[in-house]
Image (tube, rainbow, N blue to C red):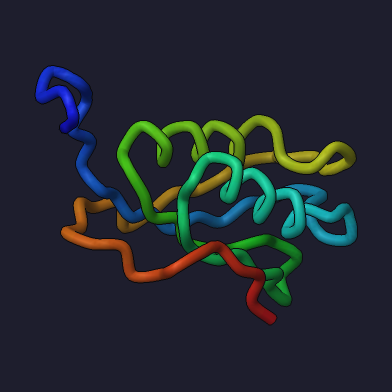
Length: 103
């Protein structure tokens, strides 16, 4: 049985768009790896405008970690200029089973 004083984290959803040198640098692959490591679900995709977009869902503290990674870390040779987050909201259940790359 879980301890009620432990963080009973709310589930969150957030959309993101990453700007900078984020295509052709394995950004999507590393995003998938990081999401799986953190235990969040969602998707990632390249855009025709040269950005990377996606959605992340999971416990609030894990979403916070993923947002930090998407804003400041990225793949080893990417260069993130900025990351926009939108539609952040609480959800009652996860809408995906895992994290995937969309084409």
